[in-house]
Length: 280
Image 1 (cartoon, rainbow, N blue to C red):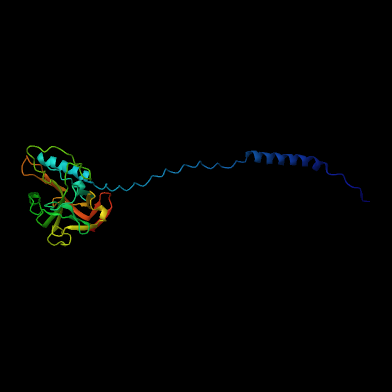
Image 2 (image 1 turned 30 degrees about the vertical axis):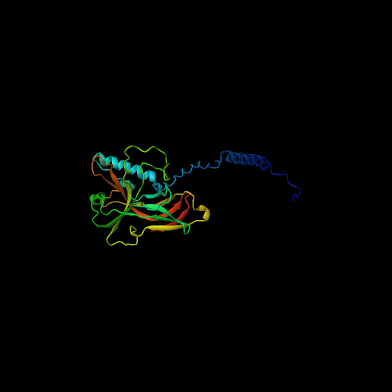
C-alpha cells in the first residue's frame, strides 16, 4: 500500500543551496573588484603654435625733396673726393617733389626762369607757366657713359638745393654787399632721357606747361605763390646708376642729375589744391 503523505525537503539540497549562493556571491564580488577600470585617455598635447606667415616687405617710402637732396649731397661728396656713389638702391623708387615758384610775385619778363606766373589785368587772371630745360648738350650728360641712344634730354632743376623744405624761402632785408655776388647756378636736377624712337608727345621743352587761373576783382592784388608738383620714379643711366655728378674743376660745386621717369606734372596752389595736371 502506497504512502501518500507529503515528503520533507531533501536535507542535502537545503544545506548545499546557501553554500552555492555564497560562493556565487563571492565570485561576483571578486569579479567586480578585479574588473579593470576604464582606460584613461592619453593627455591631449597642445596644438603647435601658429607661425604667422612672413609679412610682405613694405614698399620703400616715396622719396621727397629732402631725400633727393641728401642722396645728391652724398653723391657730390663722393665725386669731389674722387670716388663714385651711384645710389643704385634708389632706382625704381617713387618720388614726389614740389618746387615752389612765384615767391617774389608775378613777373613781367621771366627770362630763363623754369616756372613763373604772370598777371593779366584784362582777365583778370594769372598765367602759370613751367618749361623744362633742354640738357642734351650739358657736359654731365655727354660724360655719362652709354647715353648715346638718347636723342634729347630734358629736365627740371631743383632750385635752392640747400633748402630741404618745399615752401618759398623766407625773405630777409639785408644791406647789399659792396661787391654783389652772382646767384648760384643750379646744381641738382631731374633728367628725362628721350630715345630717338620714343614718342615725342612727352617732350615739352618747346611746349611749356601752362594754366590760367581766373581771378575775382578783389583777388588781383593778393601776394601768392604756387607749386610745380613732379611725380614719378627714379630711373637709371645706362650704367645702372641713379645719379651722376660732374664739375668743371675741383673748385666748382658738382652738378648732379637724377635719371627719372615722370608720371605726372601738376600745378598746385600754396594750400596744396591741384589746379591742373598732366598725367604721362
